[in-house]
Image 1: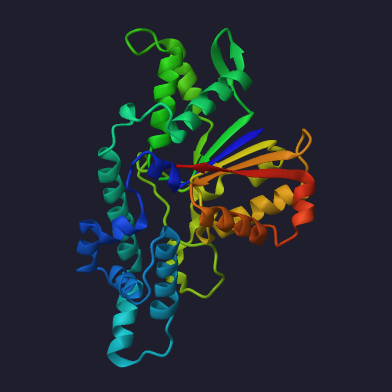
Image 2: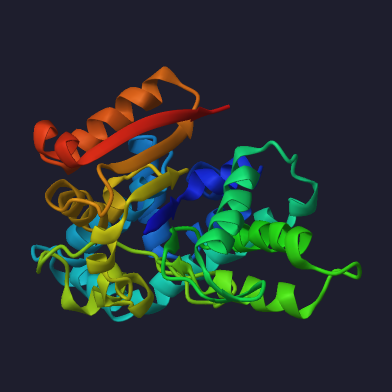
Length: 321
């Protein structure tokens, strides 16, 4: 099996300004700060300790749940306010989620994916996915029947990956007017291999939140836990032990998905692939600091048991300018 793990850097590579810092500076977040206690708290944290990553945003939500809603020492008027905020937390949280969705929809609309240069690495990844699915699928004639060899897991809310794949599929299979049964069938089969582990803007089900944190946050804030969402938990890690080839593009492997990546790299550390060593390729921004970061991050995920991991896996880094 071949696995592609796609992160926010994929969209950034396309010119979609989907970064946290851009959202934080946007009218969507600033407007939210006028009425949302959660947004106000995040803004106050950022003013004290400047942050730039989505993981920091999700961490701030967790701290709000622990330090504000979970504060057992408030009394009188402060307790009344806390109780109101607990009662209204689900509405406040949905406001933030909707605000992020609106921001990302606007940013994605600014980029014409038809005009992205052919040599852009994100475009080449989309082309590679189309070619590999065609090569590894069970087919009737030239129409794909099923594919159990490729899994694409995107952590992005946007549909940029699907759109690029659609562009490449149309070039490969569409008739002169841009459509045809072969294209329609094959593109649909490819879409079946894509999993939006954080939900998607198209499905209006984006997942924002934190990993399981035991009972340190009030039970009323359950909606903030990623693991309760079907889309986040529907992908079986058991399938991943069959991965012979892994491509990671635009992903920080950060702590916001610690539970997922911890299990994933532990699995690969303990489970051999079907063919020799597992090949893991990590694409990252061209920056010496990034390479050091990824090396250290993998060490953390495999709990510094390098020899065990390297016995079953070869991994390499490729810079993206």
